Structures are given as C-alpha cells and as structure tokens.
Image (cartoon, rainbow, N blue to C red; front, side, top):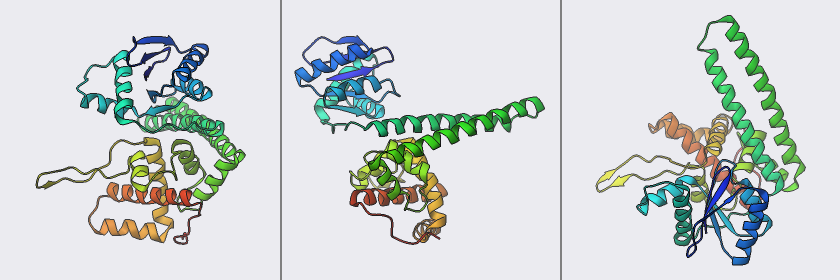
Length: 306
C-alpha cells in the first residue's frame, strides 16, 4: 500500500481498491492503522520532514510493517517508470508500485529515546542554520545599530544551541543502549559528543549494514560515471546531509589528531586529489571504521590520538 503524506491528510493507494484520503488526526490514523493490521498490508511512504510522525506512531502502535523511503528514491523510481506528473494520488500510486517491485526493507521502530534525540538534533540544525545566516548578515552591514542587533541575536542563538546540546547529551546518557554506543563512538579520533549523538539519532543503521551500504546512506559512496572507453571522475550524491556534515567535521579533527587518518589524507593529497576529495575519502574511512566498531562491539584501537 502506498501512502502520500501531507500536513493535514494522507492519500492512500491500495491496489485493487479506489484511491482514498483521510485526515491526519490521531484518531483517523489509529483507525487506518487498525485496518492495515486487519488486512495484513505493508505500508510505503516518504519521509516528509516530520509530517509523517503521526502515521509512524499509529503504524508502530498497531505493529503494522512499513517502509519510510527517501523522497529522491521515490522520484527516481517514478521517472524510471515514465511517471512525470506529481500529485498526491499519483505519488501514493508510485509508492505502492515501489513497494511491490523493489520489496524494500522494513523500517524498524525507533525507541522513545532515539526519537527524542532525533527531534533535538533537528532543532540544533535549525538553530545552527539561523546562526550562519546572522553571521553572514554581520559581514554585510556597517550600521552600528544593525551590528548590535545581529550580535545580540547571535548570542541568543548560541545560548539556545548550548541548551539543545546539553539536552542531547542528557538524552543519550539516560538510555543504557544509546549511552553504550555513544561511549564507543567517542573512542574514535574526531568524534565528540555532538557528532556521536548526531550519528546515533540520524544513522540508526550504524553497525547493521556492510561498508558499501552504510557509506551510501551517508552519501559518501563514490559513484562511477563510466561510458564506453571514457572513465569519468567518481563523485558522491544523495544520502543524509546531516550525517555527512557531522562526519566531515569529525574527519577534519581525525586527520589532525590521528596518525592513521593524517597519513591517509596526506597520501591522497600527494596523489593530486582535491581538498574536497581527500576530506570525503577521510570521512568515508572514518564512517566505515565506526560502523565496524558498533557492529563488533569494540572500541577504537587502530592508533593513539596525537
């Protein structure tokens, strides 16, 4: 079954039945989930910036299997099927077809602690983005009153960012499973409490997938662009931007503090790779290392941070 999620309603496409629409109220979603459980259906829907939270809650409570797919994957599938139009009903039909043809993996329910951490990580990202905007404006004016106002807003944002980070740390510490993963991740060079919390919140698959698939989820897997005798440059695309950003920051620190990561990046630079390419490769190496650590239940011990 394909479901397109909007702010106030969901559109439903169940093969063999008429398309339908219901309101996104808690009661309506609970009733919908109960019908899904009775009919034994698997629900496919896109991640929709938080609008799908109510649907996820209802499906999880009713123990209905579902897959939450990346919107880009769904659109690429639609184009491959020759579907160029985009309406709520069309999207629901495409998602149903996506599920039937590709049989995607079930999305595992998140714990309450992880959900809370995800919400806090999202809020932190919003505040950091606002701070970047104000910092840019600070460079674009010379008016004393405007400068004072911008600096005051930046100070307020800094305080709120600090508070959110404190809540993230407390949320992780209060959950035994998350705290264990957090401690393990922070044994790796470049990984501090915020990077660790971001990975725990936004990359729950860490430790559960092989190196290629985990790199692809973060958008750090090199994509070949070859045709005939031409061999194109490898590039990255897609993936979870918030995870990739956190790993870039960690990779910068790791290449300074860790002999292994520093030498790895230096070899790439000596081979003529661009700064971005060396940073991406270092971030990918770090992610693969972290993935293996979580999978095996071992701390980082490849070298001593310096």
